[in-house]
Figure 1 (cartoon, rainbow, N blue to C red):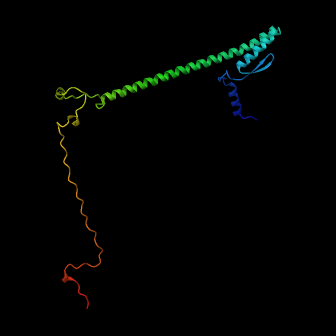
Figure 2 (spheres, helix red, strand yellow):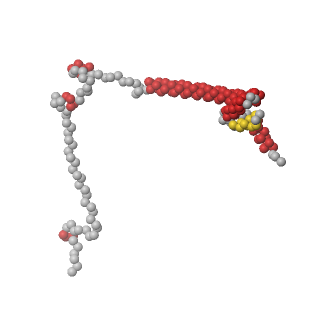
Figure 3 (cartoon, helix red, strand yellow):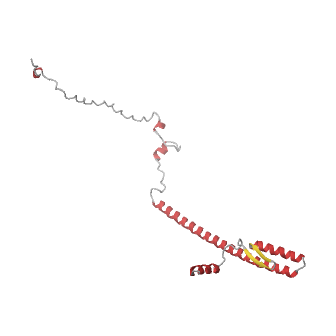
Length: 193
């Protein structure tokens, strides 16, 4: 006995729309000469070939029958291609809309960043500072005057050298404590006689 779940699953599978790719789907066509199996384009080609063969055999009824079968699969194929084209156009339209939205967001973000940079005083362009007194005295060369370029006219005062440091005297290490050395000859211990 079958369970109700398997019956409901099978029923759902039968009623499911065949919205898959009809162009590559394999069909079984029951025509006047028997079954023809293949994709819509293969079936169309086969029925057209059978219609030519029937015309050569002077069987106009069979030729018309094969042409009608071919026409049916031709309509099926063209409808599937129109649907695919419509889906492709819809996807392209959605992609263009998404790209336009991303471009708008990027432009807004760049405008906000530019506005933030303009309000930051460190980012604003600084005016050039010129010494007009020095500019009138020297011809405009565009170079900055350095002490080397002044030459001997303006001697740069030399820094005083610091005296060299003397090495520090270190304390001598303490000798091991044996017997204290006598400092005064009268304080020396007497030897036993």
